Length: 345
Image (cartoon, rainbow, N blue to C red; front, side, top):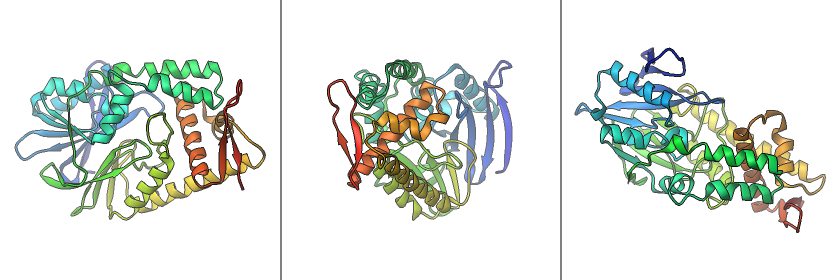
């Protein structure tokens, strides 16, 4: 890190600020405010040789992030029109949400993977199905109605954070992508988000990894209807791909840039194998619904619909992987009862 400053986007509210830090290779990180529990998301800014800017993952669309962006551009001495490219690693609101608003302000082009864009449309587009389909999935797996109602309300709350929707150009994951005057190799992984793209600069070993790998935090891996039917398998395959990439410094979507990337990847692989063993152990005592498994895994850490949504999706992802490995089977649902998972061996 070269330097860091706390920038005010206006007012006196500390949430209306973005800490700006400069890193080797011309990478600027703007730590944008977002709601708890994460509280911040990293946006990366790469100055281009022609005086324009490439912005990676601008953050969720909220009043705080609008103000924070005003402060960042003022501090850097750029007009809105300097933002010529907005790159999105994946479709989640805290990364994709502000892309359309920033495009409207700047006239810049938004770039993301085609699969990620399809997920954005399924989740947030005019024909989106997620808000209805996800609670229906949870209901089939035993989630009680009070939690279902809370999850529905939670999903509907994202609409302002992803509006307006951007016009998108697609990144070819098989071709180099130039940002900040340097050539980056796109790395396509999934599990946390289908179509997730990270970007590796071979000469420096720097990796812009979005939420594919995070320090301290295990990225959520969740089963969602109409999406990847085996998200945990996809996630672990992606980790094995990233394990072979020579990384000196990783720039994640949350928390601080970090070294020791390979060791972190290996620890995440081990974490999920241990969780699979734990779920298999729960089923050894008798068939359980997905919701019962979720409660056994995460009960002490669930205090909101946001946390419940992630916990339930992650429990179902691990159960789907046990079924794929032929260590469990899915039964039902029977009339008036949820589907259950039973151990096979």
